[in-house]
Length: 291
Ligand SMILES: NC(=O)c1ccc[n+]([C@@H]2O[C@H](COP(=O)([O-])OP(=O)(O)OC[C@H]3O[C@@H](n4cnc5c(N)ncnc54)[C@H](OP(=O)(O)O)[C@@H]3O)[C@@H](O)[C@H]2O)c1
Image 1 (cartoon, rainbow, N blue to C red):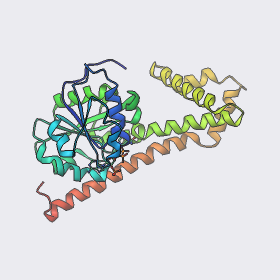
Image 2 (cartoon, helix red, strand yellow):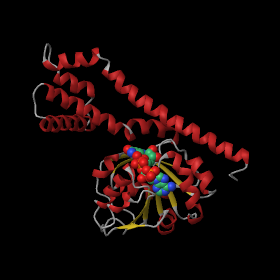
Image 3 (cartoon, rainbow, N blue to C red):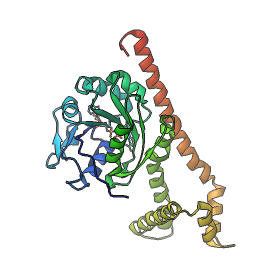
C-alpha cells in the first residue's frame, strides 16, 4: 500500500461496532503526525467505547451530536436501519462545510440527504474489515452536494487504511457483495482449505497459516498480472495432483457456489436499498418529512 499523508481534517466515527472499530484501529495505526489529531467517537453501546478510552488519540464523546459538532468528517458506521435516526439527530450540527461519510450497506446517498437536509455533503463508501490491518478495499461515490474535493478528502482518509476505488453509486451494491461481504467469503475458503489439510493430518495452526499464505501468494500473482487460468495451467500438470483437486471442485460446483455468494449478497444490499427508498418516499407522502 502506498504511504500517503492523511488530511488534517478532524475525523469522527459514530458506531464503534465491527466496521467502526476496524476503521478506528486502522486510523490509529497511521502515524500520529500523519493523522490530523484526535478521532471523536460515540456509540449507544458504551462498552464498545471503553476499549478506546485509554487511547490518547481518541476522544470518547457523550453522544452523536458531540461527534458531529467536533468533527469535519463524520463517519456513520451504524446498521442501515439505524442510519435515519442518527442522521436526524446530528442534522442540526452538520453545516455545509462538514461531510457525512456513510459505510452503511444499501443506504443510498439520496436517503441520507433527505434526512440530513438539502445542500449537505454526503459520501457513500463500502470498506471492509481489512481496515483493521490497513488492508481494506474501499469503494467510494459522492452524493448530490459533495464535490471532487470532498471525495479527495474522504479518499485520503480511507486511503490510509487500504486501497480506494471511485465508483458509480449504482455499482455500490455489487461491491458490497464482492468486497464488503467478500472478505468473509475468502475467510471461509481459507478455512475450508485448511480443514482439508487438517483432515489429512496437519496441525490446525500450520494448516491455517499455509492456507492463508497460499491465498496471499495467488492474490499477489494475480495483482502482478498473472491470469487465474495461467496459475491453474502452471500448477496442474497432466495426470497430477492439482488436476485431481480442480476436478473435485468442478464436480461440486464450487465456482458457481462462490459466484452465488456474491450475487446473493448483492441482492440483499439491493433489497435494503429498495426498502429504505420506499420508507423515504412514504415519509414524503405522509408529510413526516419535508424533503
Ligand atoms: N461489518 C462489516 O464487515 C461491514 C463492512 C462494510 C460496511 N458495513 C456497514 O457498516 C454498518 C455497521 O455494521 P457493523 O457490522 O459494524 O454493525 P455493528 O457491529 O452492529 O455496529 C454498529 C454499532 O452502532 C451502534 N449503534 C446503534 N444505534 C446507534 C445510534 N443511534 N447511535 C450510535 N451508535 C449506534 C450499535 O449498538 P447496538 O448494537 O446496541 O445497536 C453498534 O455498537 C452497517 O450499516 C453495515 O452495512 C459493515
